[in-house]
Amino acid sequence: MSNQESTPQELRCDGHAHPLGADAPRMELLEPRMVPLGGVRAMTVRRTLPQRSRSFIGAWCFLDHYGPDAVAETGGMEVPPHPHTGLQTISWLFTGEIEHRDSAGNHALVRPGELNLMTAGRGISHSEMSTPGTTVLHGAQLWVALPDGDRFTDPGFQSYRPPAVLDGGATLRVFLGTVGGQSSPVATFTPLLGAELVLEAGATVSYPVDAGFEYGILVDSGSATANGHPLAAHELGAFPAGMPMLSISAGSQGARLLLLGGTPLGESIVMWWNFVGRSHEEIARFRAEWQRDSGVEPDAVQPGAVGSAPDTAGPAVRFGLPPGQDVAPLPAPALPTVRLKPRD
Image (cartoon, rainbow, N blue to C red; front, side, top):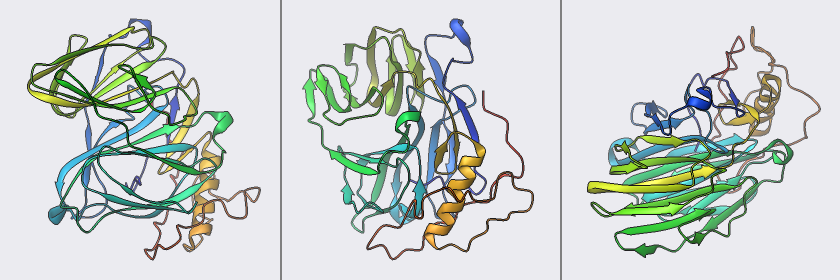
């Protein structure tokens, strides 16, 4: 998914220490902000990462949660070719179907209960379109920041359908990492956890977890209690490292949750529009190369923009365009005229 905000902020995300320090509460409650993507008949998503108080959960750095949306009213997902660098995108659907095409030549249908993981690495572009038969769209789009040593890796794409494992009143699907005795074979660049958990009304599960991980619990529907902390629909509960056990109970209506986790990234990143980099100048170079590669009218000189000139040291083609795609690519927004302050 593309971040289609018209004036995206530049984010310098510090992955070393939580701003609340050693006395941080055992669960930090992150409430979503509503972000419209595009025009009047466009999707609106609930964004819970990043926020001012927290930029990461492990290496997870971005979380958009959307739907259930009637496609007849919103127009569905129509995201033209757009670029990414330095990250992996994870698509997870509850309802609907999305067609994915990317510049590495991958073409896939994203379906409910199936992981679709795209590695941007040094640079990729892709498009995402809800299919004609989709009437309701409901899911989540997440990004994982790649560590510095791997962020210029080759682009790629993986699909995996995890088994639905029933245990009493719980159904668990592990699409990344290991929890509840289930493991995913999908390789990642940092240790991660990603799973869907569906609980019947009043059901409780308890899982031993890696105490070196940070954890996040996003409630898609219903309500739940995580290690004694209440969570309502669309809220994200974030737990610092040091937690050896995760106990979750569903409310009276049951609950559907996404479980996220990972070791702290321990690095600072700059995230702007669809790029993850390490400096403003690097982001500006990625932007200029996308304008060049996509055929958008070059605009290397932006009066007042910081670091707007392209760096000629980059590759002849960083991004390219998805084959078989006849939709015009998204032009990049204008760079900010000043350096924005880091989010603490």
